[in-house]
Length: 444
Image (cartoon, rainbow, N blue to C red; front, side, top):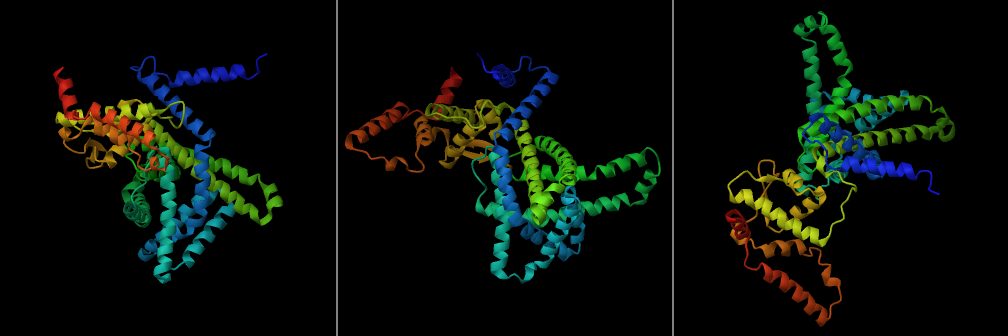
């Protein structure tokens, strides 16, 4: 007798197969758009259910609790020197608003803690520790975003220090400037006259109600573009930011109703109830942010939606993929054409982006490839094509960078077998260069 859920499982497998297979009519824009949307929903839902996103959201909650006061202190110190630090207070209140009156109390307490921290009198050691705490938070955020975007490498230490601090110190100034500019424009005589005329008055009233959504969407878009250590298209960031902003607003409404109905938590946890509710809200906020970033990733890399989050790679796949990558990058370079971008190369390879990125990163580290372009997202050969042998490509991709082979106990017989294998691979393409292969294929 078949289990009762076997039929449901089979239907879900058929649905998964239909979503992940090539579209029947890719030329139909409506069908292509609906199919892409369903594939993105499937991929994001799978990541949430499997715990890939929730685990990172939980780790960010812990880091946030340790770093939020130092981060705000560093940002507010810059604003306080300009005399405009009070303009960010409503934004902090807005974040804790779903927690009701207790949220406002928490926001006021955080602001009081921030105000008590005098950055100027911390001393050199205290200031270094403060900056380190703030950088560690943004570094943790970048690691989570890089995981979503399948980016194996973090920014360098110098880049982290300069980029993170520039956002933390200059970002609040830009936000306050935007708020002040908007307030100035809205209070101008021309705008006031337009508001008095219908339907402009109703339109401005509706836009005012939508201001929190615009602000959170703009913040999400900025984070999605800046934080991942890879190039994110503005269109994908906008889509992820809009969905994330709507999700955050809806979550706030639902969470507020949850707080109203959670009187029993106070009876159980007493004074700890506020802290528990705050931890849950911070977790929900991070989860929404990570889901928005995941939507941006899958929108930009829809072709990389596969049955598994991580692809199992074989030695044969890596070796043959490295050859394909080398030739794909070399052909436009040899013909004087526009270089391929990393994103375009990943789409052409039609294998999971993590595998292609792993191959290109290793080839860049060993000088076979180099990055080019203003944004550093274009790939070109690392040296002259007549100086790159095909055996070099295999040698690089097979190289044991961590020297794990040195730990294997090796007698004379085993060592001779290893040497025979290396010699066979080396001699096959010892004199054949990448240029020879390209020129030969063009002649044929």
